[in-house]
Length: 222
Image 1 (cartoon, rainbow, N blue to C red):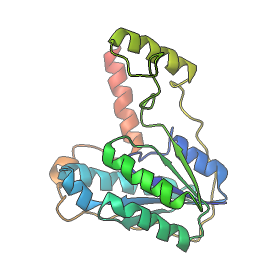
Image 2: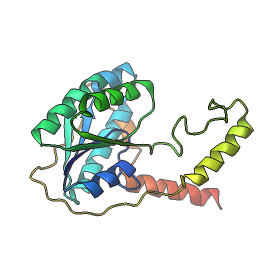
Image 3: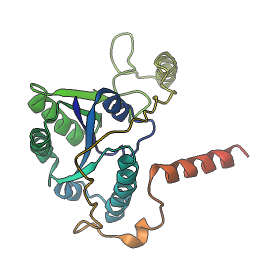
């Protein structure tokens, strides 16, 4: 099976459920990130965030390529272009299945619903909840409505989290792939979103993020 993994805000390999499933199920696997500057501007995304995004994509691409997974970069000015971009990519590379993790803001949900509805009739579209400990709507009252009292919500949330083993990371997969594609070059900048001075304060990549998290945890427990 030829798989396509669609990266969005989940720029990591470790503890990435959708990516692990894609790697487990695919004989050939490619990854894609879609640049959407028109939507970013509409959402008033800060230039430093986009500059940091590009630096993280470079780090991610190198890590993926060590396992034979090329990261492709495509341009879809708006979220509404994602379905067309993915459709073209799937046709070009004879893709059988698309994998991605859910995102929950309104525009992101609409984008993803369009992709599922348009491509799901001819491709396997596998989606997963991994951006939050528990996805929206997973914790409801006995009347199947949102809780109005926090303590009741907290207790139900903790119960559901333990039941779902939500604290556990997913099993990472190390599986070398063979690819007839090379990774795309990551742009150094996007017009209208250049801010190297601010972005330079943060080291890109999931390893750097893990080090910061470990340092924070050590300080909080000393």
